[in-house]
Amino acid sequence: QVQLVESGGGLVQAGGSLRLSCAASGRTFNNNAMGWFRQAPGKERELVANINWSGDTTNYGVAVKGRFIISRDNARNTVYLQMNSLKPEDTAVYYCAASLLSYGGRSRHDYAYWGQGTQVTVSS
Image (cartoon, rainbow, N blue to C red; front, side, top):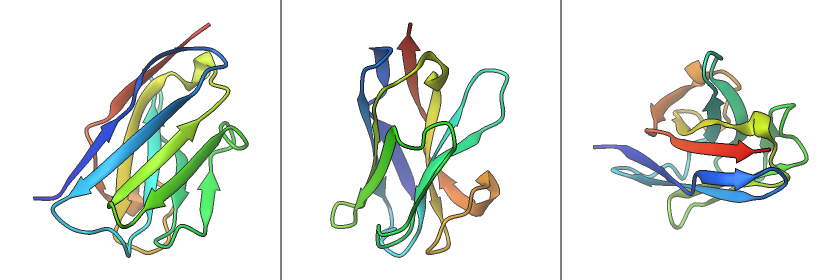
C-alpha cells in the first residue's frame, strides 16, 4: 500500500519558518517527480513547488518563489519543503504528491498519489 505522510506543519508567526517533510512508503519514488500543493478554505488547490526525479530541476508557484525551497533525499524516499519568510496568506493545508512521470507538472491532475495533508497556519 502506497502512503505519503506529511509532517512539520503547525502555527508560526509571520516572518517565521517551517520545514515540511513527506515520507513515502509502499514503493520507491526515486524515478518520479514529487510536488507540494496547498489549499486554503474556499480556494482551489494550487502548486507550491515540484521537483524532478533527480532533484536538479525545481519549479515554484509565483506566490512562494524566493521564499520556499523544495528538496528531496532519494535514499530516504523523502521530500522536503523549507518555508521561510512566512506570510498569513500562506495559511493552508499543504499536501505532498507523487507523479508517475520523472518531471512533474503544475496541475494536480499530473499527480497520482497524495498525502493526507498537514495544516500550516501563519499568524499576523
